[in-house]
Amino acid sequence: MSRKLVTINQVSQHVGEEVTIGAWVANKSGKGKIAFLQLRDGTAFFQAVAFKPNFIETFGEEEGTAKFDTIKRLSQETSVYVTGIVKEDERSKFGYELDVTNLEVIGESTDYPITPKEHGTDFLMDNRHLWLRSRKQMAIQQVRNAIIYATYEFFEKNGFIKFDSPILSGNAAEDSTELFETDYFGQPAFLSQSGQLYLEAGAMALGRVFDFGPVFRAEKSKTRRHLTEFWMMDAEYSFLTHEESLDLQEAYVKALIQGVIDRAPQALETLERDVELLKSYIDQPFKRVPYDEAIDLLQAHENDEDTDYEHLEHGDDFGSPHETWISNYFGVPTFVVNYPASFKAFYMKPVPGNPERVLCADLLAPEGYGEIIGGSMREDNYDALVAKMDELGMDKTEYEFYLDLRKYGSVPHGGFGIGIERMVTFVAGTKHIREAIPFPRMLHRIKP
Ligand code: 4AD
Ligand code: MG
Image (cartoon, rainbow, N blue to C red; front, side, top):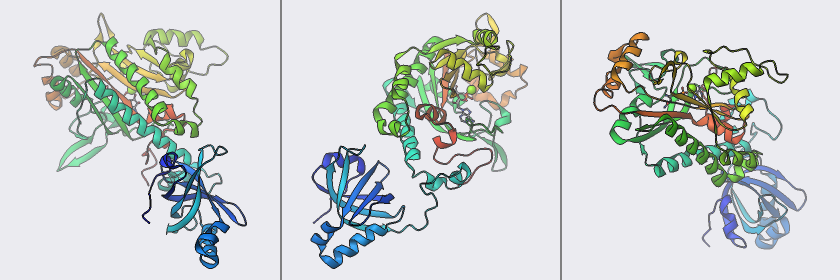
């Protein structure tokens, strides 16, 4: 008889049928004639039940007993083919279980290091390659996948073309102090911090473009929001105004949240994420607040009983306590717009009539998740950009291609970049960004 191989998330379509599942034994319990196996196969977890008398009936006393004993001895993370009849089961959260008719061990597993007891974070991070098998880590990766899928879907629907920017680069997109340098056949090269500058060329060639790839920042920050290697999605578009750009970003972030609710509902349940709260972010307009108003608000509330942030003057940059306070104050994702030019990137276009402020926005996620998007309108005037670069003492010969874009049919354009791991952390409701990427690279970690 040929087997019918299915995955756990497909069993609902096979109630009453005999199927075979390739899986790992996550846990095991039971006594005497009965054994309960918690199986996982990467799509879901569910329970399989083996009953000794059934094995004896099918295989006879000797073989049936031997098979059942094998099941009872299965250790954590042994890989198996389990064959059985799919049953509906109201008592289990998953709704189905498997009545085991046969089991074949594929690979043994002895002394699996991650047991159901509590482990410290360092231990789990050292065993990241195995930790990824746990329920919560699986759910976070499913959220990440749903966000990536929704990204491609959103941009396809909105007329964008995927335009891959290079990772090896001859210049700095954001800030030269954060670059990882490498040797490129005897010449210095840098790992990309953002594909933006190249995407601007794409926006002049194709109108609306986006990229999605790993970026690298040699930031010595050791916070729960920072990775040294993370995945950024940048988008760039010609002819839009700043307001239109914010509209697009808001629609995109809402599409990502909706995409996770639609495509990974079990993951959100595993993570105990409040789905009604997530839906409320989709239903309400995001807040847009100018930087200077945000400073006024912070100053007005700095002596409130429940606040705990340093005093800021107009012109100062926010720290994460300020960002947290602002987004909590509004209770929805909040765009802080028009920051001071002094601490933003060279390419940002000044606010008309106010050269000290630039047409930019950071999107702050609520619940203390911090900045998830950084974006701006780009300086599209050749002379103004050259003047700015001179003011900052930048080497213009490194940016000839970028300046060319302002020489041949320059148009108003803007864009933004989202750190996918920040977004995953926010939607999944996990505390630390290190769990939002399969193998995190941080200040003190490059292995496994
Ligand atoms: O705000 P950033 O630095 O903006 C840019 O790089 C622009 N060139 C993007 C653009 O306009 N196309 O970075 C964008 C986002 C941040 O909002 C944050 O979500 C994420 O990237 N990010 C990080 N994520 C994890 N670890 C880090 N060290 C990050 N630094 C930035
Ligand atoms: Mg930023």
